[in-house]
Length: 409
Image 1: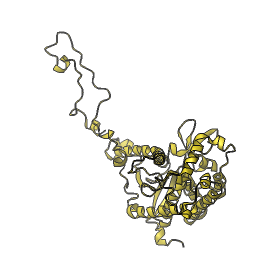
Image 2: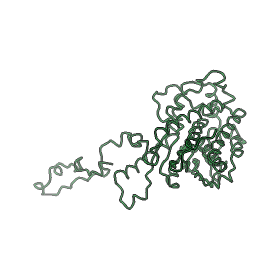
Image 3: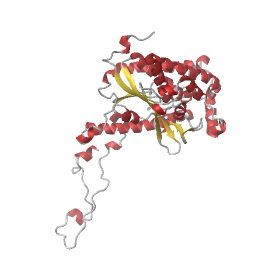
């Protein structure tokens, strides 16, 4: 049943927003659910999307579906894509061949962050011992064919409704490469999703690429420089915080996976927080203030939503599992909308300073990098030499003499 006009919103209530979609394999179905609820609700209009890995796939499928069928077309395209992922996984997934279906077998904790899986450990051992060039010399990847079946990339390149930015990691330079709407092909999506332990690097225009999560998961800066929308909603896939100390090898592996694929995003959020501080506290001259966009950050965290799932479950494609993640995403999106939609276009709903600028170093007292050198003593001037100089000590700025601007920094 199509949503009512009230659900869709009206021209006066629809607000533009950008999405930043993290990668995380099958856990990307959680973001599918978030997007599905945002579209159904209708109070927000997605202007631009920055995505990585599974986030790139969600972004591309959404944009194509919206281009050919509007909002309803976007929802249908996302569901069709994830169903195709599930069907493909049943036939080709190495992990599927190793795992039994936890829902049909009753072992529902097999993918929990504390559960050890001999099958997954065996797969890790295999991929740690042999490169994808050895295990898969023909470089066959069923996702490539699936993408070409689901998306007409020539038509997507002409998309005007949604601005797309997909991140991949340049293997040679170690820098992030962002592909925009006109550049996107099935190969660029695969580059954004290329885990080097599992797949051969994707070559595009003579350069080779790995998963974008290492350098931008996802990249936020393209949304600041290439759109006029000041609100960004980050849909997290990898939990940032966990209360329990990981002790087993499985728990340690999972936590390292989460920390690794959150690091680039956290660093970029620190930069955003610093620019906000410059603008809030008037550190910039008036002639430069208008050259910076004040970005309002919103966040739909996965710390609780996906805390019970291990890294192993990122490779699971059972349809019951994917729809469970979708439903979780819809529930969390509804809660976020109820609590925060009124703030879109008005204020950030994430305190970036408290979350990302409170590591400890920001609270340390100011220490000058180049202290004032010692005063040189002159001969026969003992009577006029200051005690400090007489003793041969350096004269340094004290806390009282430090400027207010220095203290703030």
